[in-house]
Length: 341
Image 1 (cartoon, helix red, strand yellow):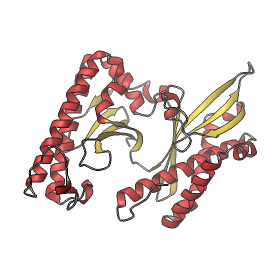
Image 2: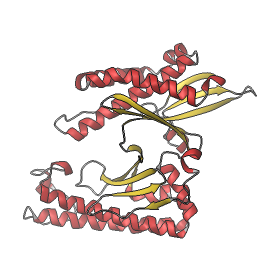
Image 3: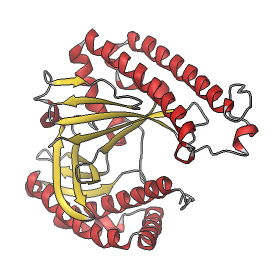
Image 4: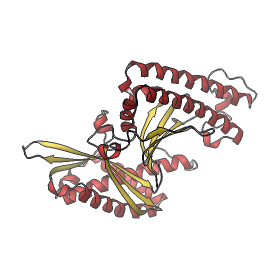
């Protein structure tokens, strides 16, 4: 269990969302196991460490958001019913259901990395097959997170279809990341009448915050300008890749939207103030088949740290953020999607 600074609202919400997500995954998996006649098998085979973590997460949510805890069973029940009917699961013979998710991740390959729950099916040939689901519980009409990746490996990891050329572009991006960090450091240190020597030393850390949300408005603008410079360079390089090969670029977007593997079924339960609103169930073919000639990278807005790629009715957002503290040049790209009205 992570230590939570409850005076830091962003950290508190992030931890509560993680707890909520893990409980939701468990409840949906349990519901699907029950409909498959495998609930006892599912519960008996849960890892003891997993059970303890779920209990601690449940206690934490009860202490800080009791209404949410009351809503989770109903939200998961409706999700289970929709998955069962829309995916026509009654026609399959399931041997077991397992929770994967963050708590029980097994390997780091792309197949399991996005999988939250998996059903094992018995085939007609007496073999077994996996049916894998990615689950999200999201506020209505909000962006749903799909990926989070380090900025200094982002292009080579997700645009590998382009081969060696993307290695060169990644090096360009990394150079801008480092240069922009130095510019930010010099400007912030000038506000405290100190000389920036390439890192935020005790002159800063003993007297000032390392969290961007706690900075003064003037200092916060300097930090935002830093992320904007990085996002601007990333946008430039993405446009360069798109111009180089439109088809390869479009193929690369699948993983950023949460479809690193073509067999993954993406399920999102939307709620408003913890009340059920809607459920979306998509596979990669349904998500991408219609939009190859109908997508574009939109221009960045002033001081924006995020890039928006419009894919038909879907908006893919790539946001430059600090890993945690802005005082280190370790940034991540948070990827999220939203269906437009």
